[in-house]
Length: 139
Image 1 (cartoon, rainbow, N blue to C red):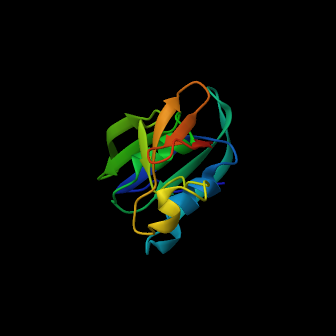
Image 2: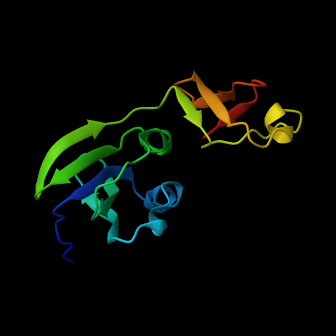
C-alpha cells in the first residue's frame, strides 16, 4: 500500500491502534474539504501497531482532545514537504466541551449555554472532575 506524502498539512502519529476513527470524529475531520488519510494497524517498532492520520491542509488541531484520547500521540506540522514542528502530547489539565457531565443536578444540565469544563483530578487513573459539581468523568 502506498500513501503519498503531504506537502502542507498535519500528520497525527503514534495513535493507539484502532483509535484513529475516534480521533477523526472528535476533531470533526469529516467537515474538511481536503484529503484525509486514516492509516490503521501500521507496524511500529515502538508500539507494535499504531494508527496515523494525514491531513492535507493546514488547520488548527485541538491538542487537548488528542492528549485526552491518547497522551502518546505526536503531531507533526508539514510545510513544503518538510516537518517544521513536532509536538509530543500529554494529558491536558483541563478539558472544555470534550466530556459532558452526567450528573442531572449539575448546573450544566439546566444552563445549556455553560461550557462543560473538567479538570484532571488523577493523572495516573486519567480521571477528570466537573468544575461545577465535582462529578468524575473517566476516559
